[in-house]
Length: 290
Image 1 (cartoon, helix red, strand yellow):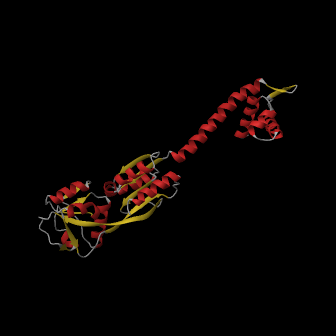
Image 2 (cartoon, rainbow, N blue to C red):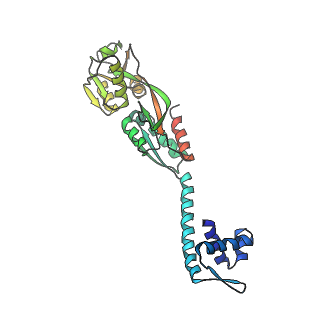
Image 3 (tube, rainbow, N blue to C red):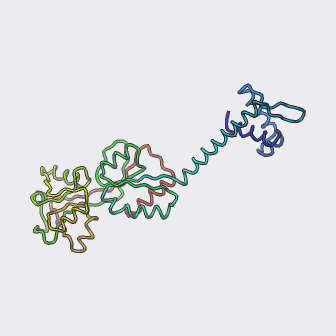
């Protein structure tokens, strides 16, 4: 039995006969008669007594009519909700801390402006935490700097950035130093597990070096403030310190024997299927990096 059978049964009852129901349903009269017969045969029930030229609902028919209306109404609610989800979609975005600072405000503003029907939520934390949320299906997509390790996630490079060594203009350090020389200065670094720290540690490890930070923080802004106060050298995303360098609050220090280039990644679960609204939101977010 299908919803069509139930809707036909209801139409016959409300129209008062086969012929009128066929007209309402825009189908041939024999098709309506056959549908009623199929219901009666399938459930071994008599829905109507045929009295003269009239159909009269039996007691069983009356009880089933009430239930048929409930069932059809539930189906209509389901269909409405399913179709509504295409235009009123929840969207869960993740971002690592640097991207959260530099790009998420513009992403949120653009989505709210262009897709006001989307119910948006954003989580900003370390790349490792964002990776866990994506893997567990708690985010639709995310933008991170640093490496993604889960085999369940798909990644695409959307932008390239680099880490930059910076210090106060008053801090006594040459404009150019080697990586080994860098490790001998007071270092102001992000915490282990952050994308910036992981890249720095990996680069140092390849060169048989280690970093022993004087100050360690999960806050980029705290490290910028400490560097500007002359407390040491911070190694932070170039885009994040660009404004302070231009304002003369910080100076850049070139590391002569390495670079800290890295990609910003779009990441999502390999089994993720996007609604059209989510795809549009994703395009809006990607445009922020151009």
